[in-house]
Length: 241
Ligand code: CNA
Image 1 (cartoon, rainbow, N blue to C red):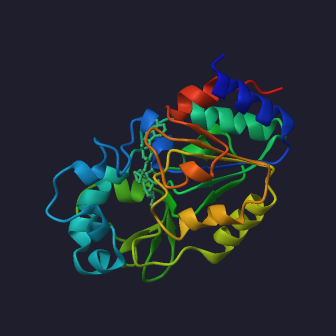
Image 2 (spheres, rainbow, N blue to C red; image 1 turned 90 degrees about the vertical axis):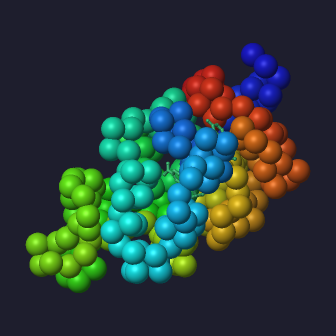
């Protein structure tokens, strides 16, 4: 076993309240592109940058174009959990991990069996009518083209946090509580440039901070262990006792 993996294994063995904080890089091994990698969405050509299309204003003013991008680039109904999602579910089931805090909206942690998941940016699986607030599953938005509508005629909106929109307060509070009580924080697959999500790391008071990311991040200097590798490859080698 490589030295950095031995260290991570030892810290996992010693910890009882591990929290995992992740981003889009956790799901790239499931075939969902992230935003900032070279083959991520920010490097593909669109008439507008993704931050613009995925903003509240754009949703209100160009609803049809929003849904075209959303269906094509953010919905991945066929995607399956990968070895990172599965290992985290295993750690939770073994009583070692207390929570997953994710910026992802794909629901793959729950699909892998994780139960305590704080979805800071919402979930594509939940959609609601902007007029009568009736809830709809992802299929209601996946199917067809154009603007998806409720039986009442109202426009459906995915329950995801768009740019310009605030995070859900209860979700943030749960995430902060889990992070502040963690004895090991593993941060992975995130560029840590999206706020306020990335700012939640400051609530960590535990022993070791581990960062697993393909590219360097602004938090590398603060971490006790930095691994520039695929998160699935790293986590799959961790044994759960
Ligand atoms: P990001 O800014 O795209 O950063 C992703 C980071 O992950 C990059 O630094 C990559 O180097 C790294 N990375 C990519 N693949 C791997 C891998 N296999 N192992 C380790 N590291 C890897 O994404 P963030 O999550 O930091 O940005 C936050 C945005 C992206 C959130 O608002 C998300 O909702 C949004 N997003 C989510 C999804 C999803 O739900 N799967 C997909 C695309 C974007």
